[in-house]
Image 1 (cartoon, rainbow, N blue to C red):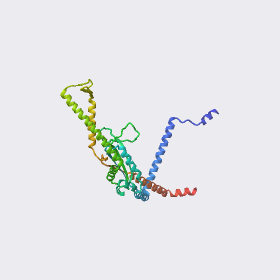
Image 2 (tube, helix red, strand yellow):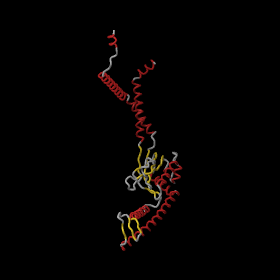
Image 3 (cartoon, rainbow, N blue to C red):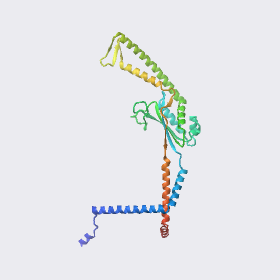
Image 4 (cartoon, helix red, strand yellow):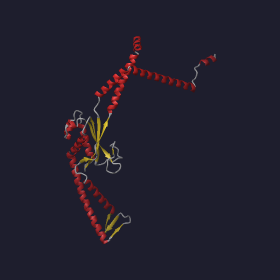
Length: 314
């Protein structure tokens, strides 16, 4: 009795049996896949006119409903004794005037014809920083809260997005003109320029004194330099050699900055335009969907008798 009970118990599957079952399942899936491919090929061959009609219809609908071509322009601007952040705030404020209905307010503020800005969808500016230390913007600051990077004080990056054609050079010049006419921008630039001019005069006065002292030192020989070489003493009055060098370098830096430009905002780089080809992916998706619809219709026609019988049985 116990032997019959033991024989009736389900047999445990060993590893070889599991592998055999897996191989059998894979073969079955491959066989089903082959049959499906053959069936699809047959439908494509037999009902090619249906599939072609659906593909052409899909292409036509995709073309007729295609969105406007999207473009993005970018360029760098430089400022003259005006913090770049002030200009960034000014440009980002303009973005609020984009209404997607002709952008009449934006055209009015930039003093350009409405046709030049009607396709603009977005305008924004951000800070940049100089990685190589050559006063050339290298990268945008993605996170303005990232304190590990110091933005360039007198440079910014501007982006303009549009749907359809847009004369980005006209908009670029309009943005520069808009900021150069802004009273708050011009006043800050003028004030900072005059402040720097006052400081420059003071530095040049110090340099003249230093030059005079050097001449006296050279002629009299009554001077001493400390062991560190960082200061010298003449007629009992010590002054730092390093401070002298810093004054000369600061003076040269201010002079160079003051020769760059006189308007508050100017262009720093050419305008780069990229076209976003999103319509290609959309067109391909629509055509594929129409092809699948034609394939389903072809399958239904091929198996219409079986489908009708199944519906009758239900």
